[in-house]
Image 1: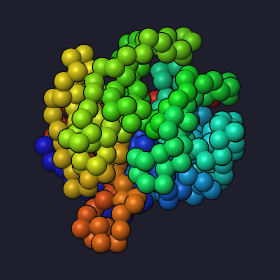
Image 2: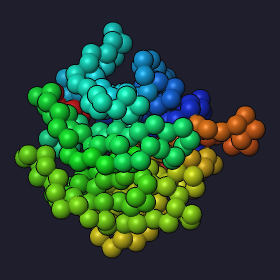
Image 3: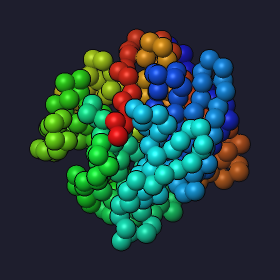
Length: 297
């Protein structure tokens, strides 16, 4: 197994990596830099799209371009014209809220959650976020509220379970999931973490064996965990303490891409941890992911 730097141009708060297997590119965002990035690992070329607010996550659209959750809006991004088209607004009575992490389910719905103001990393206005679903017809529904930091999402291969992270609960929660309606139910904890040892659970992905890979903020690692037994299986260490999210990519979906943050670091801390804010890649893991899903609207 080898860990190396994939994209060595550090951002402020890199998040939400998504492998687009149709174009062979990695999509990810710089939340505080207000950018969507699209990087080609073969040519090393990176396209950057400016967003006029903090952008929490991006996924491709089946019909072309992408959909972003930025500020408190869902919007379509046209890669050719670089224009954004607003689709829906949430949390209209909470002006300091913003979208954070998100992903699509197998029916092509786009799930993304919000969080409150965060003056210091992981120190947020408590219980003011929600998890939302942008349906393929453009309608938005709220799954639940009272969220601290809405983060990682993943589904089992049979789509019967949705996994979810609200970071300050220090757990992975599971829901029974009805793919036909998009309704999650029967919430329960399947994995818990000790923040003083493990760090803060952030973004995650799932492999073909049903194991979860969770990026742990503050401890510079991605943990492979078994949600069926609640046990940690492996730790992958990175030269950046604030690891934020991960996804499988590459032609065989066996390369793990991991984003990181330097938000809140002083100039001295950045000097001490110069790779913070870069995107990393892990090869030789012996695990594979499934293709990232597109928004079908």
